[in-house]
Structure formats: structure tokens, C-alpha cells
Length: 273
Image (cartoon, rainbow, N blue to C red; front, side):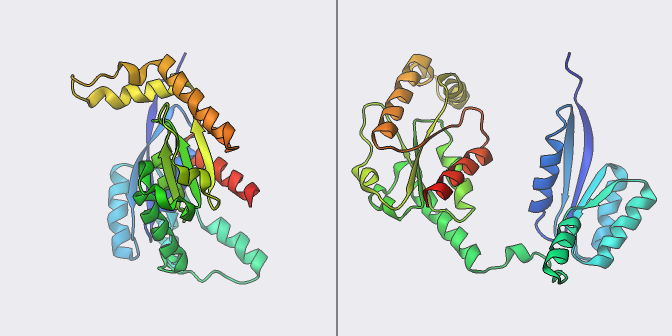
């Protein structure tokens, strides 16, 4: 018998964007299937005055506090205020910085938002994102050889979101739809630069996703063939034939999140180098 889901407040205080905290908080929250976090995100908190307003909100809805604040005086204020309120709080970055300091033999620079510096890596990610958006869903197939990765697959195999996720890692990613009976572009077959990966899933999973996709379409739209599992199985068989013929690796995304699919693709890329 399933337990009723409970809720708790999760307060995330950051002197930067809060992305690190959000990822850490959600990773921890995911381990508790019967408890759902109500997230409160406070980015760009860099002064005591700003912090006072944050704790005014926390007093209204107390819960767990996670923070990433490099200013040690401000961090002490958070610790002290949480102790006075009897609330648990954790500095997410501090244990990691301690390990780095111990190994490298030098203290951290304590630069706020250092991971968001407009350096070469930042512009590489922007360039990759631009490339990926321009090469979504089979667009501009003539220059696929400029891609780092090309994802292929039938409709609803998460090609676009996976491509965007990889682009945010600085990896130029194109994606090509596979349509039953339609050959893939010759430029894809001749490409030697990118890693080409086929994304597949079970017919049941794709049918389910497609059914959700067509819920908002007009009544004149014929969705029967689009969600029919026999037809989807035929599409998948055709996609597998293409990948097998060209010796392109395949990844089953049926039970994978976008992040897990991307990790599997990056592992293939590492082995291919």
C-alpha cells in the first residue's frame, strides 16, 4: 500500500544563479518518493540586508536550507540564523572546497559566480547551442560533418531535448528524424567527423509519449497511425536496420532520463576517441 505523499519546504540560498543548489536539492529530494519538495530559490544573495528578507520568508514556511555562499561572513550569518530557528542547513560547496584545498594545498579564491565567467568555455557552449538549434530536426543537413554528435531516431525518441542538453555542455549536436521508407541524408552517411547515435525505445513507450503529444491537436488530425504500436514497431525496425547497416551504435531511451541518455552518449564518445 502506497504511503500518502507529504510535502516539505526546501530553501535554496545562492550568491549566484542557484543552479548548483537546485541540482543538488533535486538529486537529494528524488531519493524520497513519498516526500515532495516545495522549492524556494533565492539567487544573487550577496548582502546581509538581502539575507534578512530571505529569512523573513523562511520564518513563514520553515524547512531545510541549502546554500552556496562564498562570503564566509555571510555564510556564518546563515548558520547562526538557522541554529537560532532550529532549522537544518547545509553549505553545499564547503565540503567540496575543503577537499580541493587539502589536495591542492591552497585556499579557494572565493569568487562569486566564478563558474559563469564569460571565458572561452562559455562562448564554446553558446556556439554549440546555436549550432544545435540550427540543426534541429534535420535542418541544414549539408554541414553535418561539423557536428560533434548526430542523433537519429523516429519521432518521440527525445532527440531534441537530448541535443540541447549536450549543447549546454559545449557539444555541437545535430539531430535527424528517421521516417519509415525514407533514406537518411547522404551527407550523414558520408560524415566522418561526428559520432552518430541512434535513439530507440519500446513501441509501448513511444506510443504513450505520442498519445500525450496529440492530446492538444485538432479533431481533424488522424492520430491512429501515429500512436499505433504495430506501426511504431515497423518504424523502429527500420531505424534499427539503418543503424546496423552503418554500424552506428544505438541507445534505448525507454527508461532513461535526458541526463542519463546524454551520459551514455558521452561514454560512447569517450570510447570512440
